[in-house]
Amino acid sequence: MKIGIIGAGQIGGTLTRLLTKLGHEVSVANSRGPQSLGALAHQTGAKPVEVKDAARGQDLVIVTIPEARVPELPKDLFAGVPASVPVIDTGNYYPQHRDGRIADIEAGTTESRWVAHQIGRPVIKAFNNIYASHLLDNGRPKGSANRIALPVAGDDPAAKAIVMKLVDEIGFDPVDAGTLDESWRQQPGTPVYTADRDVKGVQDALANARPQRPPEFRGTEKSPGTFTNPA
Image (cartoon, rainbow, N blue to C red; front, top):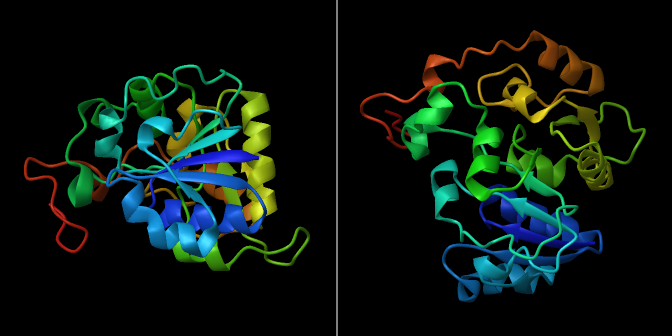
């Protein structure tokens, strides 16, 4: 597939490495511009592009940037991109650590529903509940014992099927986590978050999740702080 990745941080860089290794044609963009992506391009064969060009001509697009930066994406990012092209959102809301308060999320809108509203496109939530290093190193062939499972949430069955196939290809068991409005079950602070569970473990964790966001993942009047000193 032709895949556009917007964001070259821990998850974006990891997905660039994994997907190019599998033979996908990857274009990658970040806020600092193509000139900052030379090392990643040299290591992986990915094509550095401007953010404004990252979605055009792709079979799948991955948005993997800090939540607070999503509104800064170009308003015409998906202009001319067919509605059938799946968009993956890997993001998490970290108000005390990085993003500051986002009123709609604080009021109960799921993180990825908020992202979908910002970019004007439906999204599939995936790859948000695993550490980047585990995503890079812990994939296993299908059928392997103790294979880690990853939840995938979204409203479009066809788009979700494409993303679940990609999860499997990378080396993880995909688990259907329901609709996008149910994706709160895999947000930070839930039982499935960074837990590296198998299929049954992920299913149980999703079922046992509670909609109340834990205090450490809610904004305060001092937010944001940093990951070492949250506020």
